Length: 423
Length: 162
Ligand code: FES
Ligand SMILES: [Fe+2]
Image (cartoon, rainbow over all chains, first blue to last red):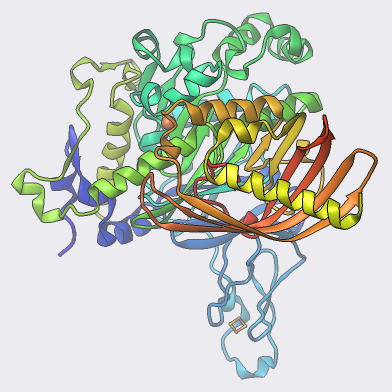
């Protein structure tokens, strides 16, 4: 008897047991991370043939590698002989992968190249290769996979909104290309992974959890997310399929606020955008900035930071981030992005360290809740804020005040769809 | 000054710096810094140009001042309450001594309680590299670079003064 998700995820609340139940966690790893589309990494991380990075997709360790024909492949980090992990560093460059147990050797495409004493095998070599992601698609260098190949095309998952959010970020780079090769930083948090899609796109808490930051520095979050006016101008948006955004655009009081800099400091950058797209759209981009959005289930487009949500166990996760670097800008410009990232995100940052503590406090608060309490009216988490004032636009996107839980509901709505889909 | 005298003075400085950090005596700790102080905790080894890397922490003097102001607001959730913590410093070596700069390396282990959330005991082993300078007769710190043994594994919240 599995979990009755329909009983635990309602339109206006969810049951807290879903945030620590090991059975729910196991279901999620299968249905969300194996059966569905997930973000793996960015092509700029593996520029040269043989470049690889390891990554964790739910509980599955994978290798994302640049093949000799330039294509990108995502392979299970698991020898197809007896299961030994092939790579245990975060990145490297190899012309093949060799297992250290019985020295099986695999090509960059995962096929078996050599087996010691091969006369012991009747099985055709072609059947002995590494498990590979069955579907892989990229958009603007963002690599997505569906491990078991059972999901439809990426377009069905991302939808027009998912592509637009990625485009909105990449278009801010003068060449249209971003680079994510400065390395990823892991923030280890004792919370369920699902608290992060929520936290990263929750507009309600900013003025409270991050009050210490607002009080000590000038930050553009003051104008987009703190206080009554800001949270009424900015929008919490649910695009469907679990893709959600805190849309700061209506709140910015000046161009380039999102870069924390004035125009005269980056004149050549502004000119490059104008030259590429014309004055009108360049001027608009300088107002709008990058999106603050979450693409289901594990990719956070945090303005000029990209983060991956990595589940580790029911009460343990990693928030792994890197800094967006633009192509075609000065060294100083990209250094500014690095320093901005260090200030905002990570274990020692001024912002998300306080989100991490909040997630750990939630985990402490909910860890005793039982699934069976659902029909005793105990252990529910309320997500009803703003339900009465949501608007739906012509594309079907649902939006409300930035402090409303439209984003949180959007995540859980998609979660319920997936967890109850007939396979 | 003999090298023994220098060593003793350096040790006094490091022990004091450690105690002030452990006890969140923030103003007193900040008073140990020179105006060009640089504070760096990379996500790997202490090598390469810090400005080109994405680090856990890379504070110039202005940013470390902000860090301290934030801790002093009383609203910094990840240090509310301040972590009870103590660090041991050992293997202190004066590795270089220029006209006005003394370079020092030391190993440390910090024992910290995550009193703000889970209450777990967290252990932070590593090496710190200091550059010290004499200002108005007494030592000040012009940089503190920290290489965590666990640098590449990722970290739990690191919002105290390491
Ligand atoms: S387990 Fe890899 S070669 Fe045997
Ligand atoms: Fe937050």
